[in-house]
Image (cartoon, rainbow, N blue to C red):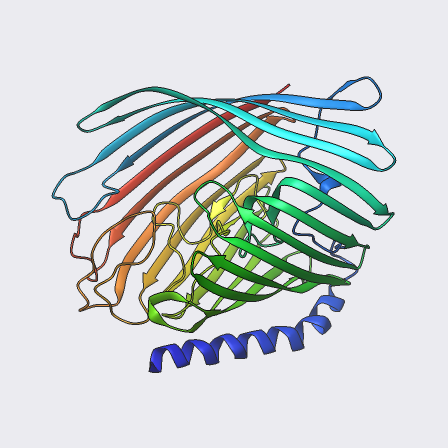
Length: 417
C-alpha cells in the first residue's frame, strides 16, 4: 500500500509539473520546431496510402512482405529450452473509393501463409484472410465525419488504443482541436464493448488531451480515463507524458488503479549519424489495468515501431515499474537503429507474475523481475521497400522461479506496388 501511494503521488506530481511548465517551454522552442496539429484517434481521410489509380474514383495498392521470427525459452517453469521458429508471407490489398457527395469507402485486407517449427514439432502450412479495415465514411461538413464499419483506432502515443474495432465513429477536427465520440466492439481476442470520448488540442508546439473509455467485458465493467501531453521543446528535445486511471472491476480484486508513462528524447551533437538518447519511466499500481485495446508500441522518432516496455518481455503495466534508456542513430530519413535497456520490478512482491509475452511464476520473495537488452531498426531503400529487424535478450531477476534467459529475433521485408 505504501508503494502504491508513492506511485500515485509521483504520477500526480509529474503530471502537474509538466502541464504547468510545458506551455512556457514549448513557446520558447516555437521558432525552431515543426508546427503540430491536433491528433485524432481515427481519421477516415488519412488511412493507409494508395499508390495507383483506376479511373477518377478508385485508387489502390498491393503489397507483399515476408517475416522470420525465432524465440527461445518463451515458456517458463517446464525445464525445457523451448525453441520456436516461424516464417510468414503476406499479400495485402488497400483500396479507396470516392462515392461522391463527400462519401468514401475504404478497405484493407491481408492474406497470409505461415509455417512454424518448435523444438519438438513441425506444424503444417496454414493460410488465412484478415480484414484489417472496411468502412464507409460520410462527410457532415468540412470539419466533421461519421464513419461506420471496421476501423483502426490509435491514439497519439499508442498508449490507450491501438487496435482494429467494429463500430461507429464521429469526429470533428480543426487544426487546433479535435473532438471524437465512438461506440464499438473489439476484434480478434478482444471481446469487450466500449464507448469512447476524446478531446485534444494543440498550442504552438504542445499537444494535449484526454480520453475516456467505458468498457463492458461480460459481467465486468470498467471506466478508463487518460490524459496525454506531447511537447517539442526545441529541435533537439521533446517529451511525452501519459497518465491513466481505471475504476470499476479493475485488476487483482482492486476497485481502482493508476498508471503513468513519461518519455524524453534528446538529439545529441552534430555527427552525421544524428544520435539521440531516450529516457523512459512507467509504472502501474496493483489495481491498474490497461484498456485491452492497447499495444504499448511507439516509434522513438524512427522508421519502425518498437515496444516501449521491451522487445522480448512486452509486459502490461499492472503492478509493474519499467525504466528504459535507448541510444539511437538517425543518419537519414531512410534508416534508424536503437539499442535499448529495460529494467523491470513489481511494485508489490507477488507470487503471480506479470501479464507479459513471457510466462513464468514468481517467488514472492523479490520485486526485481529482470532486465532486457534489445536492438531494433529499419531501413527504407526506397519509398516502396522496407526492411525491419529486432533482436532481444531477457535475463530474469530473483523474482522469477525459472532463472533461464529468453531471446527473440525478428526480420521483415516488404514491398508496395
